[in-house]
Amino acid sequence: MLIKKAADIASSEITSKSLYLNRRKFLAGSAALGAAALAGVGVHSLASPPLVEANAKIDGLQKSPFSTTENVTPFKDVASYNNYYEFSTDKYEPASLARNFKTRPWTVKIDGLVKKKLELDVDSIMKMAAPEERIYRHRCVEGWSIVVPWVGFSLSELIKRAEPLGKAKFVEFTTLYDPGQMPGQRRDVLRWPYVEGLRMDEAMHPLALLCFGMYGEVLPNQNGAPLRIVLPWKYGFKSAKAIVRVRFVENQPVNTWQQSAPQEYGFYSNVNPNVDHPRWSQARERRLGEFGKRPTLMFNGYDQVAGLYSGMDLRKNY
Ligand code: MTE
Image 1 (cartoon, rainbow, N blue to C red):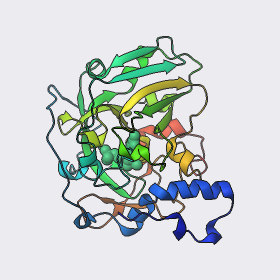
Image 2: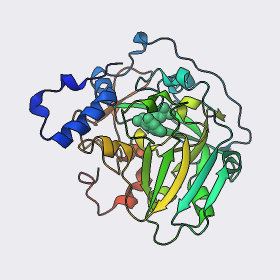
Image 3: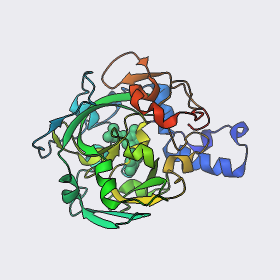
């Protein structure tokens, strides 16, 4: 994978020290995003063969009315081409580097502005509601997309157990910090731990998925085991992996990508073909495993969330 170095940045691009520092930090790891977008995806031939293993099956899956009928992307592609900076900035490496990642025991802390602070074992979370298979389109900010049969249930099932207070306006999700197990965290490519956030009404929307499986099996480690969120109407980076904390807060959290490159990534990050990334167009996307590009749809085609943003300028609130 091509990673642009700080030395490659033209001095004309440097407008201020803080922007430069932000940009340097960002480019050290994440310009993989730009490089991938420019080079296009499908550079598989450069990588060593991915390591993809079968996982435990999840029984009793219910079908979901939210599922798309589009062709599902092959498991091997979804499990071998990953963005998971805690392991590597290279998309082919998380599959092997996360191989021995320990996902048990695993507890999730739920705190902040709630009536009931909870510390829950992941296995008890998985039993909170009937598992559903939801076939969602998933669009990465870099311009590639996949169609994945995720397994989980609405995030609202978990949220309501904690009984958030009226003052809670946002939810913050934090990924595990464990540099011993996650080699990417030994490098300063992002601020660790990885943090993402949603507005309460977004988090409570039935499409927001608390996810612990895919393709009928528990999640492969590289896809965010044991627990992640999946937000199909937002760019993929909002869908945080390996979550250990869910915190309810009054003020809008600063998410990791916004913190690393505020000129490029915002808080909402709704899929929007009309708003270009500063370094590339977002109008089209390439499905992993396919040739050619297709048009990207507003909200990634999930029009049922449009009401959440009525009256908002989505060019400003990107
Ligand atoms: N969560 C954590 N903790 N760390 C990450 O680097 N990458 C994000 C998101 N969640 C990321 C993360 C990005 S950029 C994308 S596109 C999706 O995970 C990729 O999910 P997938 O590997 O299951 O396709």
